[in-house]
Amino acid sequence: MLKVYNSLTHKKEEFVPLQPGKVGLYVCGVTVYDYCHIGHARCYISFDVIQRWLRRSYEVTFVRNFTDVDDKIIKRANENGEEPLALSARFIDAYHEDMDKLNVAKADIEPKVSTHMDWIIRLTEGLLEKEMAYRVPSESDVKGAGDDVFYRVEKFKNYMELSKKNLDDLRSGARVDVDSRKESPMDFALWKSAKPGEPFWESPYGNGRPGWHIECSAMSWAHLGTSFDIHGGGKDLVFPHHTNEIAQSEGCHGEKYAKYWLHNGFVNVKDEAKCPVSGKFLAEIPEAEHVTVQLGEDMYICGSADCAEKFKAEPDTYLKMSKSLGNFFTIREVLEKYSNESLRWLMVSTHYRNPIGFSDRLLEKAENRVAYLYETRLAVEEYLSQHEAVEGDSIAKVFARDGQDYNPWADFETFMNDDFNTAGAIGVFNEFLKVANLLVSGREKEWTGSKLKPPRRARLLNEWTTLLAKFTEVIGLGESDPESYLNQQRSQRSALRGIDEARVNQLIADRKTARENKDFAKADEIRDEINAMQVVLKDTLSGTRWTIQSDL
RNA sequence: GGUAACGUGCCAGAGUGGUCUAAUGGGGCGGUUUGCAAAACCGUUGUUCGCCGGUUCGAAUCCGGCCGUUACCUCCA
Image 1 (cartoon, rainbow, N blue to C red):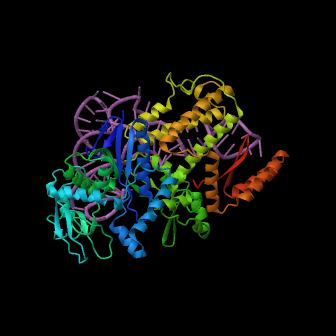
Image 2: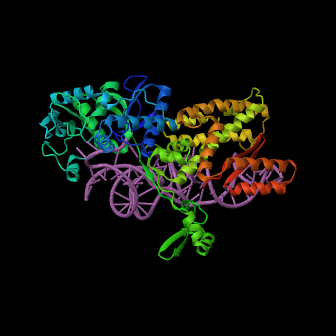
């Protein structure tokens, strides 16, 4: 049974769709005036996993819009001397590129404001008829500009149901100049009359364009009807955006708008300090071991007394190395330095409603986990290419503990059904990956108490491979080809650190020769040289693999 | 100023009344393995859940207060 936390009721509830077997899902999309940032990544990755999970049990209609008519777009376009719709089209393309990299699937329907003006007008008409909205003459001198239309907030009883605020607090906190033509300061614009230098559309109220909130009410109506199952978005949209959406849609249709409201938490960028000598992140070292060093006016923190000594002796040498890596904001900036799946892993490893810390250190950790995932897959593939399988017991039986079958998928499902708890689910997944490594390295005895013959291991690894696909399909990680993924990840790191791959390969070949000649002194000398380049070697049965040393 | 969310061990992060003396991952330490490493795997470390008080037979988990962090309060996912 699936349970979801509903922001509307502030409780976890059993998920029961309006129509059996079907789910209508609407997620607020981007306002396309710039590249997507990590906050967008969080939201769309979260709902991508949610959507993937729902599709296992329901026929899902997933709608995620583009807001391509908006103040910020117009402002940016005017600065660039570009048509607003041309600018938004560019950023829609950029959005798709970014989301492809993050393995975020396209929504079933991705509607745009600019092609839904008729729905927006129908909705506005409906609200005017019910006197939930009112017209006031435009102050604009643009020819054809007629009226502005405002929503009459006082007429909608449950206005604050979602945000748990009260109108009086909002009034007192208002920080924007009040438009004196409004009946009440809280009233918001449904339709804005045309202004100089702005695009406009025709309407019964004269030329103009829609207000900010109406587009989601209109597009969800167009594609999911007046009432649907799940509405999602970032927590920051609770007020005013979602609050106003409810007011508009319920005010017009007189029906419950969305049954469940799901809101993802924020991304908090952290600037994390490193020890200037060892380069280690101070957060990784117990505070008791930190040593403060004062140089003139400036204070520095080292990770240990040893480091502090070295630092005092040669501060200039170390200060050069400690330059800040800076904070990242756009998805593109992050993906220049880290592999695409590392960002997704980071996002999925925290529950979607909780705040998530964002820093180089955490990305680096995520990067290493993704590498572990692919290295495991690679090792399994190698093993299976070398060993034939024979029939035997299943993973559940062989890895049973305390008389209980080992059933990672069931555990995974339990977590996912508990408000899409991907963080817990990832914990199960981690253990599942370990199972493969145990078998590949012939160490299953550590878990099961007895050793298996290779054909039995191969049988279990075949089963494992099938099962793995079920996990990766849900979390959207580990679905690429392992070899090419790892190579890509390595090339990215090599390029960033100026490591010459050809040189590394040459040294590895030299070392291989030395090892074949049993000249281990020479081989180790070469390896030291390689290690000095921040390259780490891994000797396997099928040859030497190499990776770039992690910053951690 | 108003409102809300969050605060878990060295770090990240699950856990919302009793098999929690806290899943999982990272780190540290010890080991298996390896020509030596790396990787992988095993063991171990951490009595502790922001602080104070209360409810309860029993609390990380419920209630109250305090402190801290983050965010929102008309156009940010």
